[in-house]
Image 1 (cartoon, one colour):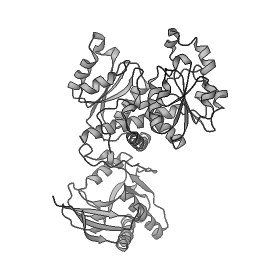
Image 2 (cartoon, chains in turn cyan, red):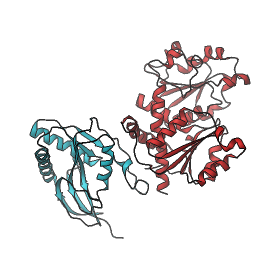
Image 3 (cartoon, chains in turn orange, yellow):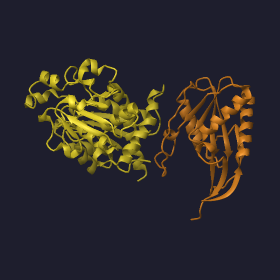
Image 4 (cartoon, chains in turn orange, cyan):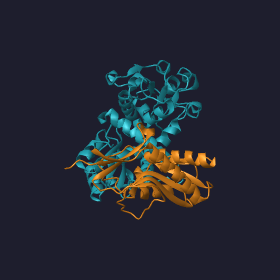
Length: 181
Length: 309
């Protein structure tokens, strides 16, 4: 795969996450009953950053959870590439809470479907909202993000690579072109 | 990331990397059993059969809960209530079960090698839940998981296994597993219950429990089967208890922070005294809790492996 375009750099990512933090607070009238749940692995780092941003704005620490959705995928038996399973860590009750699910890229919507199923097994949230850094299109399910860092229309031949400082390297989002053949 | 095999027949056939994979997966699964809704949908629609030709509560229930927490359908067949009493052979019983489209058969049998016969003849995955005096791989894996959870590592630990080594599939699987993971295994028991040339498995042999326990990080007691007394391999239960039973004085010889394990069911006051079994160093019930997570990992990884074939 070769790099086709860089659609977001560190500054762009910081600005997007700052804006999303403001939007979350505006939409929910503050932080009461609010919690962030990141989808492993990229979403967890982004959820922590959003929580830090909210803390800077409001002076309140919003709880952050981590969700591993491997067990809830609809393609569990047919996937060729198996990713190692991570831990699900939600150390607060989701019942009656407003949960903002956080993921790096919204693509087919199947990950979000699995995440919602998983979350519901922990209790009955008051509502679930979705924040993504990048919406690349090609939805296969009726799922839309409430907060979007950037809309980037892509083709199916392209792949989106989100690099985060937490995983080593620098913050950036790249569009990659899959090799022909 | 899945096991590259259809069946789990014994630790002997596993690579170290596969053992690590099972343990890592079990670490993630342990959390599922602490939820209010103790279930994930991963194996929805799969059919698993528990086929037990020997009595068992712990292992059968553990596999059953593991399958249910992965949303698989599981049914239990025990020899006493099946057509086995009418004279049906093992293979015929298993073929009939498979004809109902089972995906996995978990088998316990008093004959060593019985699961291998099934694995060769069937398309279903086969898990060995204990065969004769051969292997009990899921027990060794849950023991490994428990040691790692409590002590943080396996490499270099001194682990004493005490009891009827000769007839114990738990001992055999544990010796193989702990050796693969770099622990130093000591075995101890009456000379009549230590197999000849066991040193070739890479263990140190002791005939006095005091010597085996001295400086041990882990003490693993084995159940003494009361039936063995009739065979004349040791003089009596009371004598066995006096010479080989684990009591508080003997525990004191071990390393500070030693953990005490037992695969169950325990004979209180025979191989282990009640104060030790219920004492602060005992992790016997942790083993049971961890058993479900480890068996979830085994079932899940075997199913995954088949999906990629």
